[in-house]
Amino acid sequence: MENGIVVLSIMALFILSLFGFTYGSNTLAKIKKKKAQNKKVRLEELKLEERKRKEALRDEKRRKQNERREEIQRELKLLEEMKLNNKWLNPKRAEKIKQEKVG
Image (cartoon, rainbow, N blue to C red):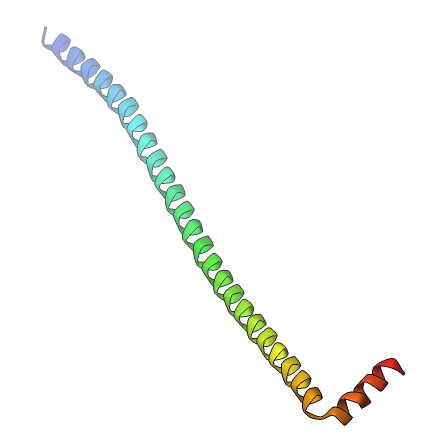
């Protein structure tokens, strides 16, 4: 009888250890899966932040280029107006320019 209790307790311990091993490995797999998913989410967030930062830099550069383009166009228009005003102020010069354009 005494040996039966020992054998029964060893079998129960064996079954519990199998159950614990199976349950533990499943739990460990779930934990690893969740960590991998969290890492993937963090990487996606970092990529999104980097993309937004680069887009902001591009927008800033484009805005500066547009401002410079507008400034140059204003300067060119001002120079053209000054040129026209000079033509009208100096009639001899205006005739000379006309002759150059024709000839």
